[in-house]
Image 1: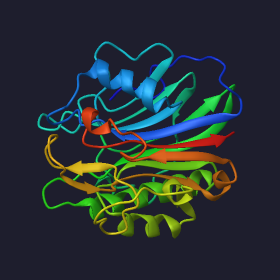
Image 2: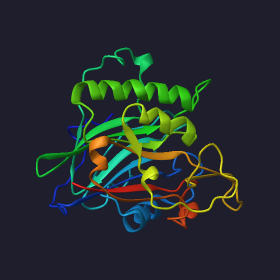
Image 3: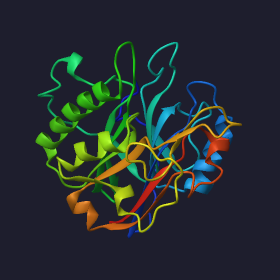
Length: 269
């Protein structure tokens, strides 16, 4: 695993007002739809984030684009799943979030090592946000619920160490909104999708779906459309909320890139 302290980064002055955070499942692990260079071009030009949590992702073999850095577990989950969660930023510094493991003291209580990362995001030496990336990995008899249980223990440990402010959790949960959103409400965090001013018209939405972030089916079919990707923000960050976007309605060419569409939130920090 690459040392977080040695994670690639570059530093330059950003707009001091806004930070655009995104999450996206790139589908690089199994049957990718586009080459790596195309995916990163789309990330930069279409999603246009300052910070992004990428799931089912791989680090760029040729290195990150100019001004970008990232943290990840090299090698992914294993030979059959050579992908993981990657947190990348542009013109900001990323450091491993240090915290004492209490509920996750024992490895069996932790998420899979390739799927969660918590990083402190700094600009000009100041903490902007603390971001925990998550992927609802399902191995053996595990499912999205068992992955969520492990994530909750990770969140508890981070919050016990650092408190509940300036906290973001983002990724692909592999669970319906009805199963995920209430879980985060119980710890005082809000789905940015709840903060949308309007929603697209969905035909046959399921289990609380408000937008479509995943097409479960072949690229050339309508597939089964689902909402599985989320960004949650702490209560204090709601006061910094500027805007959000997400789903294929806001990213109409998303299915050409992956079987997922991004979620974004812009915060005034």
